[in-house]
Length: 469
Image (cartoon, rainbow, N blue to C red; front, side, top):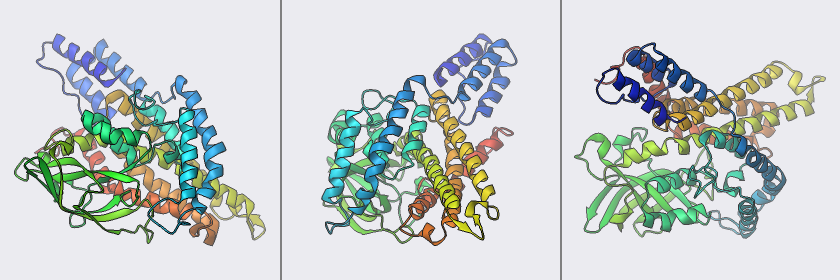
């Protein structure tokens, strides 16, 4: 039963008791919803039934029975096809002399894996629309995404890579038929890549109201001027389109000043200045680019949803597209623990296996406990999105984003320590895994913002006017 159904039942009871208007569905966690039920409709049977249904549904984290064969097929494909080809894929990098494109051998490996994935129906899982994706619930996709997170190229092989996943969701939900035909269709086919251009170097972009890149309407064209950096994926020559957050009306209310506009990467007004490094690495060919818009002109039809609706789009994107990272992070933590245990059991020092020395066995125990806690958290957030809707489930999403990358970093760090010098070398994937997860604690919204949202919601349970003055 979805959130609309719960809300309708509450509204009917509310009106039956003589109150006016529908009950506002509060944003936030389950506890707020249950408190709301208690305040407005008392202790009657209807209230108890609705609360019990909601609680039971939110805590039923079992994968849908019909998805189980698909989940098994994904695990089999990764184990039998993706994993054996992964070393050759990375060995072939840059052998053609161009750091910012895939080598011909990499293209062949990737194309072969994509073709096989498509043929087996393992494609575009993340989209909830059954016409363009598998029509999976967020809960079901969470199980699959955790498997994808265990291998560095599995997501792309199944066309489930960031930032394309979030961008495809935006285009599917908010794009016009023309925008979908031109950009969503080739993205769904895995023919092109995309980027999301929001972060700016001269301001705190965690407060999106400060976005300073300007877009002004000149006749039938938007003219963009401004500077962005850490635009992930924009270095890849397969990246053909950027969804760009801009300011279109500085005089409007703060949350109506911004818009999102589609800007092709080959636009003559787009100047790529340099790749930004992440812990000293440029992550070629994907890249995180520093770029400028210098009178970049695009048709006025390239705006998404309408002028001043950039925040509205971002809130939609903050649901499934932003929790996918957390889903994959659980898989990364699993892989780190696997590497830690294998290393600890296969190496000896001072007459004992490494895993038996000091507190290493306790670290293994704590890692397993943390992974299961993270898994439950992300499954609960995914189920909340399915039951309550993306907006009402946002507290669960923020809890995931505050908790999971930080704890995954800790587990990877412990796995590095178990490997000694090899842990920070090119001999294991751990160094790259660590930098990726540590970056998420900034790139997917800073930890502090997520804790601010969760903490503020918790205080509102005690004072419903908190923070609203």
